[in-house]
Image (cartoon, rainbow, N blue to C red; front, side):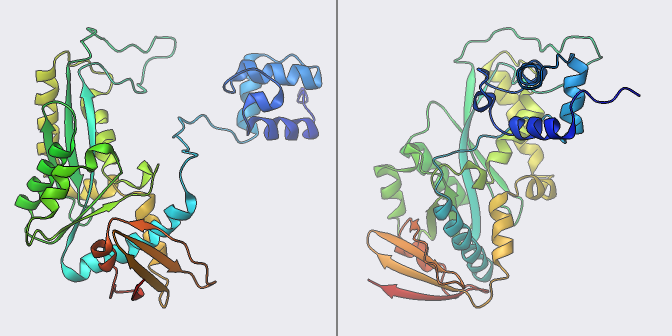
Amino acid sequence: MVPPALDPGEQAQVKAAVQSPPVEAGIEAANWNWKVLRVFIGRHFGHLLCRSSCLNYLHRLGFVLKRPKKHLLKADEEKRKAFAIFYAALRAEAEAKGAKIFFVDEAHFRAEADLRGKWVLRGEPALADSTSPRLGEKVTYYSGVCLETGEVEEMEVAETCTAETSAAFLQRLRANHPEVLIVIWDNAPAHHGEAIRTYLSTPNLRLRLVPLPGYSPDFNADEAIWDWAREEVTANSCLGTKAKVQEKMEQFFLSLGQRTAETKRRCRTLLQAKADELGAWKGTTLTVMAQRPHAWVAPVAPGGKVIPFRAQDAATAGMLLQANHVDSTLALV
């Protein structure tokens, strides 16, 4: 048996290098592949390896090829941690009061194929047919998912999303669900404006808005609805026209009514996992300092660390009170 070209020390250097971008190893390349690895090994150890040897080393050293998700560097980890505590208490309060929590988002679906991985015979090209439809051949939707029930609400938008269309979607949620509603969404421009403020002033509305921390799409359960739709509707399929997209998306949304268990499983996010872990924090004090026009949620961890988090308003923050497994106080300042 031929011994490996790289000794254990050299293999350790390769393993350390591949865990950082190639530029940090002095190679002007955006990403690691077998050719870049061959350059690294040649420069540092004087070996010229073939493609299969480079790939074998990557596998031997524990590397696998994955499609990455974006790591949003602007996300504030302290606020994300605070929001997880906020959400854990909010979820418990909603369950105790019979309220429903909907995660809401918007997305465009174009008539062009959404390229995804596909199985093809070895040696054959992976192709997706396309008629090159115009960019205007698209449909925009609002969607909202309730993780506790698996219910999904949707609304098509004629043009772009605005404060007016967001208010219209909130009206649809309110009309279809008699319970107290809590809507969690991001801070997109369409989620602010006079139309929303006017709607929220409706007497006895029993609806609260809770903004996600910035740059945290991984906390929004509704993102999974869009990924699911692209998987089943537009993956490698050029639909050609807006009308065809509307037809297929309507079928998809109708099918979700019979797949509530799968909806709850697919849409579960990191936020729910963190909230479940925090549910074991019996005896934790969660102080809500209501300060108009905003509220600051200050979780006091066992170590005494206070993390401020800006909530939508004092009324939303007040929903944390009397949560099932979190002791809470309300201090006006």
